[in-house]
Amino acid sequence: MLTDIQTPEQTPVHTDVQSGSTSLAATAPGQLRVIKRNGTVSSFDASKIAVALTKAFLAVEGGTAAASSRIHETVDNLTKQVVATFKRRMPSGGTIHIEEIQDQVELTLMRSGEQKVARDYVLYREAHARAR
Image 1 (spheres, rainbow, N blue to C red):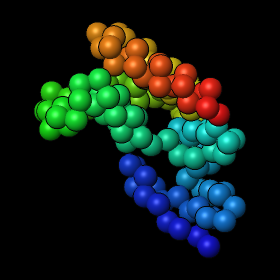
Image 2 (tube, one colour):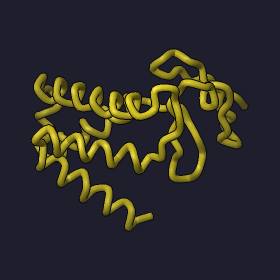
Image 3 (cartoon, one colour):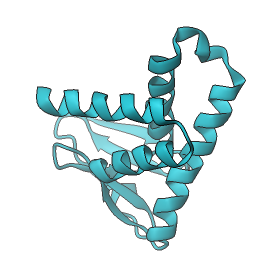
Image 4 (tube, rainbow, N blue to C red):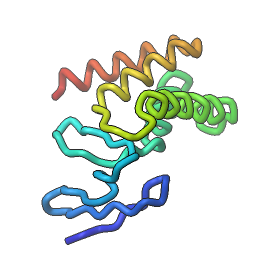
């Protein structure tokens, strides 16, 4: 059974739901790809970084921060910084492990002065690593 998923670049990714394999877009030259923890490779999706950052900010600042334009602008800016870092490192595309992306998110949070959020993000990662 195949499903079609649209990535931010609007490149279709065809995923076989039963085997979990992807074709074409996940192996297209010039594209960033991500190695997941289970070893599969998928297309890079910047919106996943934005979701993780939003959750980190909400965990620190509370649920009422969800409506904050400051939080949305900060998350957007930080996401762009993380993406720009990988595009600068790999201008012709390449494969990044999920841990590298998370490390870069931590670094970007710390460099931007968001130490509380960075600390909680690190603690969250550690807790989930122990659970695995």
